[in-house]
Every structure is written in structure tokens, then in C-alpha cells.
Picture (tube, rainbow, N blue to C red):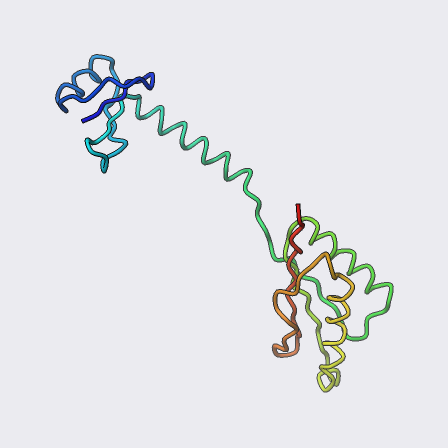
Length: 157
């Protein structure tokens, strides 16, 4: 097997027992890093220290990973213009933070007989957010609610 020393220097091709003896002399481990290579590649290293460093690096990567949530905003069919603008601003903020937004129109009583009003309101939201958001799920009636899913628009770099 081909052996690499603890400092990254090639020690050459040697017998497995010889490589193990070298590793034990230095109080380190012999780790097989390239089992499919011809000949197989092993490295002399402190395996527990290497594993610890890998775990720390994974933890850091998870911290820096961007998490997207699905935020939810609820509208009513008879919404006043000021309330509409306020909720639209909330949606803009969520989208700028990189979250997806589920916009829901709630119908009550006789409002159910006019789902086109809800769809018109959702289309207005989509139109007002053009360039900032992409409609991921078109308006869809589910029970007494009509939902639409918006995702942040990809920013060209």
C-alpha cells in the first residue's frame, strides 16, 4: 500500500505491517483514505483529532447554512387599502429575507359564493410583487381558504 506520512509527505509503497509499525512508533493511527486506488492509499494521522476537526467544520457549515421558512399572511376578501398595503409590506420584508410566503384569503359565510373576488385579490398581490416574487403555486381553493405560494425571485448577480 502507498503510505502518506503525518506531514503529508509520501513515504512510498510498503507492506501493511510495516506501515502499522511506523504509525505505532509515532503514536498515531493508520487510516485507509483511498481503498479503490491501485495500490490502496493509507495515511498516518491522529484519527480522533481529524474526526473532531471534521465535526467542528460540519457544525460551522450548518450554522452558516441559509434556512428558508414558509411565512404565512392571511387576507380577507373585504380588506381595506391601508391594511392591504401593510400586509404587502410584510410580504416584501419576508421575501427580502429569503423566505417563501403563503398568502391565504379567508372566506366567511356568503363570501364563499364569490371565489373570483379572492382570486382577483391574490392576482393583485402577485402583480404588486412582480420582480420581487415568483408565484410558486397558483391560487387554489381549499375548503374556505384560497392559497397562493410566493417564492423570492432569483437575483441576477
